[in-house]
Image (cartoon, rainbow, N blue to C red; front, side, top):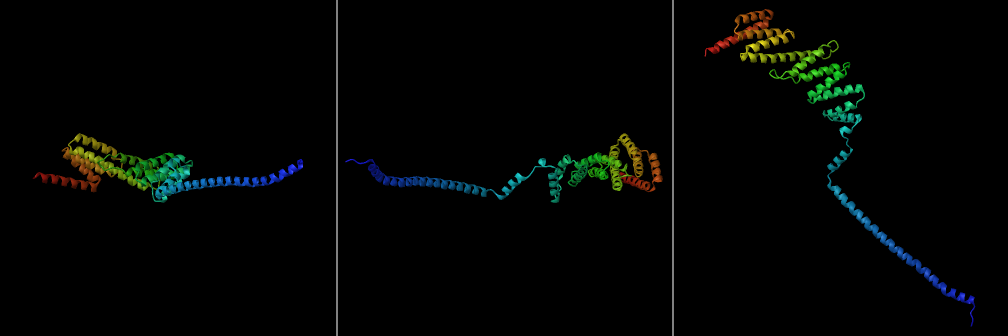
Length: 315
């Protein structure tokens, strides 16, 4: 029995079509199963990774908790704070103002750094005077003197030059030594005072103060010469004492009139030590004539010394 081709195709389609439907339904389910497995694995990896990150964060946070707060603040301050050498003019000025506002006068380092950075000559005047004052107030006399002196040299026509020169005198006067010590600062103060008084027509604000300091310094210098003179006299070194008295007469006779009677009294002492009573009496009469009050006082002191000597010789 012969079957036509059309019938064969129809039979095949009827048999194959249900199979194709079953296959098409089964394939997506397999694919979806594979996809679900991959998704689950990926999700598991994400969870594991999240747990690891969380563990690290917890450990880091616990480590951070162990660091003291003051250490953190100090670290942050160190990171944000600038060094003086890296600051510009504005930073130095702000730092100086902040330090002074807190009552701390140790802001000199900021002002020192501001000087080479300052391009405004008027502001530079103010900075130099302020720095000199800060040095003086904090007991740094030598640095204060140097700053004031530099100001005088740089700004001879400034309105503040009188103040600066006066402060140089004060700096030297503050460090003069006792009469038996080196008198170099005393001599320097005298020279500065003379420099100031040479401009007394212009400098009027501190004239009286400078005159007072000059008189004190001259008196201290004279006392120093007295120490040396009496050392030679008491050591019976008459030649050295005579030369020293000549030097005193030369240096101090023209200073002020008050030194003349004191020098004459030294001449009386020298004549007495050299056992020249006639010269001593002659000088005594001259002293009484020119300076009655001082001469009488010296005569009384001389008499008391003689009586004391004669009294001690009795025993």
